[in-house]
Length: 223
Ligand SMILES: *Cc1c(COP(=O)(O)O)cnc(C)c1O
Image 1 (cartoon, rainbow, N blue to C red):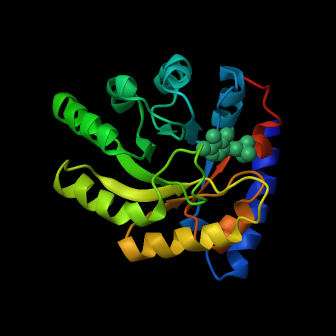
Image 2: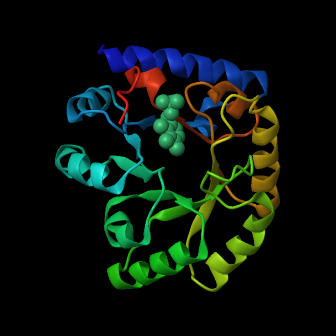
């Protein structure tokens, strides 16, 4: 047992309880380890404990840490959960299994181009600015359906889910609820929501993937 695996056991127990309360099973909810700012040694501990699903915020940081780990653990699944600039799309398409932060037509166009060039494409989640916060990335909820239609029709992109980060310092429940309704209405399979402070509420409202950093690795250094 390393430190990571005891933290993960504790989180999984809480996930299990939260799921049971609403009649869900843990097999429907994946636990992502968010490794932004973590050193490769911390990621190795997670890998030794059997963790394979990881999230990073920055393309550059992921590119500097993960390729070496892939040599040893080819079944790592890596998701981008931070903003993606169009000039990093080539690298991101080559690197990530899933990009969770698709939020604008320009980015969809760039992804479609790279998909053609590289003959591969990560699965994509649309990021929703569920709290309608001006400083935050993501599409306003009312724009998601039309954007999804364009992504599939015009750009032939594989959209499989939605992702959201509710406003800080407020009860997240109404936002989670709205995200669940939107995901169901659009017939999408994946709903990425819930972090260290609110994953139980996210699970109660239909999250299929919680993204956990500090509760697994401890507090991050400020970057
Ligand atoms: C950092 C981050 C997380 C993890 O946050 P914690 O509070 O440390 O669990 C989840 N999602 C996104 C998009 C993040 O940037």
